[in-house]
Length: 276
Image (cartoon, rainbow, N blue to C red; front, side, top):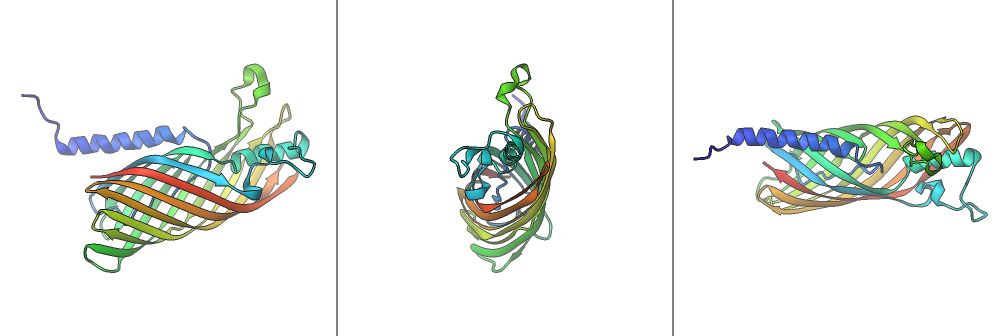
């Protein structure tokens, strides 16, 4: 008879594979589109969640990269300080779609610990919940702390010939979010979550335009918004979908130029979550 792999061994390999896949996805995309995908509760103690999906960043107004916006003459910036600023904004503010992977483990005392990879960004989160009412339908508050970091990478420079693998620049990013959610679990079949998304981040790097030398760039960002999400499924398999709407304000410098940008950004996201 063929031997069966012990359940514990299969779970360990499954969790290890999820972490490895998170690492692959970490270098697969560029748009800064960190979702919440919080679900209707923390992960129960001694259980694990693994998720796979996608997220998008849709900026509006001043948050659209300058390279894609015409100036008052009807033309996009093409040289000098304006182009340097455009390269910075292209990486820091650009919209796009990125893959998302997550892994989370339940801890005692209504705590859980998770990691989420979204494009070139990764986030670590520690959450705690307070159940407001026991029963089939369980409302609760979920609060936590979620630091994150990663890289923002500029687009390839098409005019570099043999050096077209080079990028227009890159920057490192560190930040933190403070999730505060009101969540409801309806008999483990339906989940709802909603609440504010508050955070701040710092960016520092170098960007270039054409043959110019790379100029230093740095900026602080404040973000305030709200998220609304829903989950539907049976047993340990759920489909999660959510929408974040946030106001962002960026303030910093690119070379000798000061940069201030503010506006609305939408971050829709969806994922398939397996709990075991």
